[in-house]
Image (cartoon, rainbow, N blue to C red; front, top):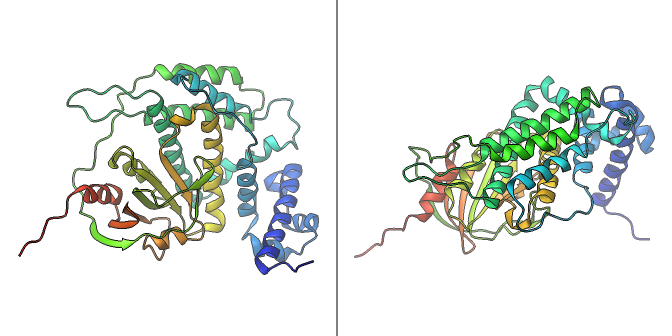
Length: 368
């Protein structure tokens, strides 16, 4: 038998730790679970656990992310699905995962009940969580807009459905929180009905581009990104497509909307999520996106799935290919891709709009 490489050995050890941690958290909950007990379950040393995960919370988030990313087979909604039907299906997929009054305390459905207390307890978690909620709302809004484009009025900025999506997510997350602290209080059918009826809500929602934006830098560089995975569609992402790539730290994810709205229809838009704390915050990002996108893929026809792609760049390899050598949660860089070349780059606030608009402006001809 061939000997395992160092990377294969580490991956196998990591897998054993995750299996053991899942059992420990399911039996005792996050608070009462112990790293020593997890190491014993995995037949490993305490040091082997800490060599793969910096602490119990990081391990807890990794377990939740692994579970969320393995949802099983599903069939997406058929063509012709209405907004009301899609929101009802989104809510049904969401509440189907919630614990009920008769759910066993050790059931995996209760495993995520300690997530929100952990977010509330640590400011380092709250801002990324807030920004991830913004990204979730944008994804739902884009699906709704593709399903039933909002009406537009002359002289009024383009309408959108982000505020409607935020209202839907507020209802769904509220149901999750109540199911965690008071199982049986939430009637799933009522939540589905509420979300269906929100389809008729009109909130006067619109988006306009920033008034003043520093121009992007015009460049002409080869674009050679590494393989990447799209969390929205749960499939490989072709980052060579013409369009915009936005490298955003977990404190800057709200800028994803600017990337979508500033880019012409038909162009690819990719958000590359990066963080200065990948061992703890990357699994949080994976978890939040996986929970929402699994429901979204079930509820909406494939043709209505958002054109926005989201890549979790834990190693920073995609960011490095985009010219971002050092990443943090405050990173905000955008590049415009055309025919395998980077034609514009912008950094800082409004970078997405700057890169998109600069790339559309013809380069002045030089004569002489």
